[in-house]
Image (cartoon, rainbow, N blue to C red; front, side, top):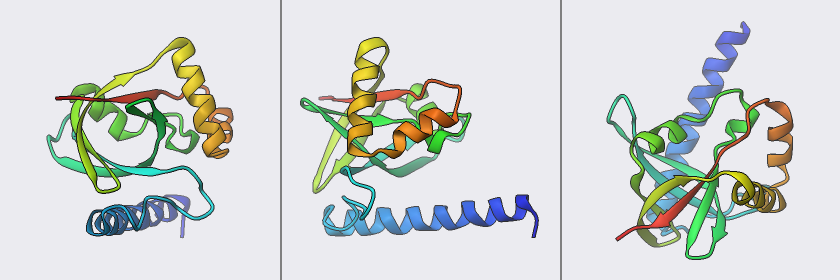
Length: 150
């Protein structure tokens, strides 16, 4: 089995795992899936619409509380490219999230400067892996604030 085959199988596995995670989170009102053992930090479900496909998707993500809002980190594990959900939010910033039982309308806003740095540092305190992710890539990993809408 080559590296490409392994990568494809790994991707399919994580796609299936994400579907199970989302189903369990939604069905349990966040009782299952709002925390991942060994990872730390709370998780939400981000709904987003494909920038090119127009297809609705849901992605479980760690989040950082930010007053009445929340911040999410576009790390993609330190990959050189931003995750698809980041591009989708840039194209379609009006969306919804589920945090526990609560579903809320939000508007995505990409942070910069000291706000970005402060939130990234806070995210790293919640989940130390973010420091490793930033060290793996030359890009500055974006931080997106999901502001309550409506």
